[in-house]
Figure (cartoon, one colour):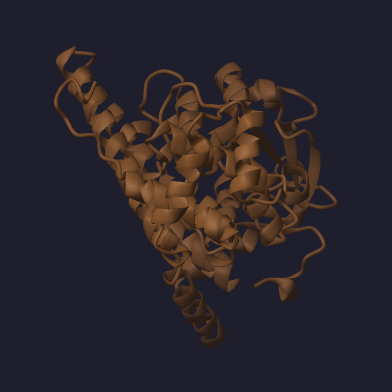
Length: 433
């Protein structure tokens, strides 16, 4: 199409050939190249076929040289009559394998330019065909540009080979990290063991009646992700002000009772603890928006502009102004941003009429849609809230009502009312950070 319109397609045949030539001249550079380049970033079909063959051979730890590559191309059914001469010519014109990453950068740059052109054409077509209102088209355009920045495409059939490459990349990353769980830690190890942490593209719903600690456990997760895992965290608070949220974060981080923070009655030691906590908190990348009129689209647009985003927290779902299935929109947002999105949800009063007031999935407002869209649903329950004579008034239960990764069940936690926070049951103050 571009050729018919007289437009020059952005690609560099010499750079594509030099990447392949470098891999054949010095196979030691292959792991670095495979980290930088995907097969579909090659424009010329033959170059793409050769690269895919080398990638497959490397994955199966096969020896890689011109002879073995040609043989595997025959096995894969991508061999052409001129392949032998073509590989010999590629190796002849490749100056040196030492500059392979520079060649790969050129290939990536041209591929991005091609995708940018294709995206611009799609946006143009959408505008001139009148495919919706301006705001909807702007949202769609932003999504496409964001996907380009993330090195992904929106929609379309994807070859299984590229998905396999992504899965292997993720497995390698998880193996290299040495972590016991694949996702971000919640800061509560017992909860992590069941949920396997907060994983990319997951919608995690924390559901409870008012006063059970929804906001508290979400801030636990946010604080741990920012302080201990050095992640950028976006918090959208539709009920509490940013000052109230930071007050809670400081109380938790400094282990100074929130009541003392509210009254300003602080000992010298508490002031020192708060100063230390404030310095640590200020060094994190936690971003807060307390605009109560935000829509999911507003949140998504803001998150797209946050570099290295690791976690999104929304407090709480029933206050949203968006129309339609809000939970579905949040699931799409988690998938698009490739980060865990933790949403807080208020339960209906249905449990109040039951003798056992522990939350159930059916207690969720709009439970059908939420239950369907969420990957993990955590219900919070504290017997001490309902039973003033409870033997363990600060015993809390995080009830895993749904978990796409498999395991459900109840995790016992300790509620720390003075800090409006949770910790593991066996933990004591001296063990906290």
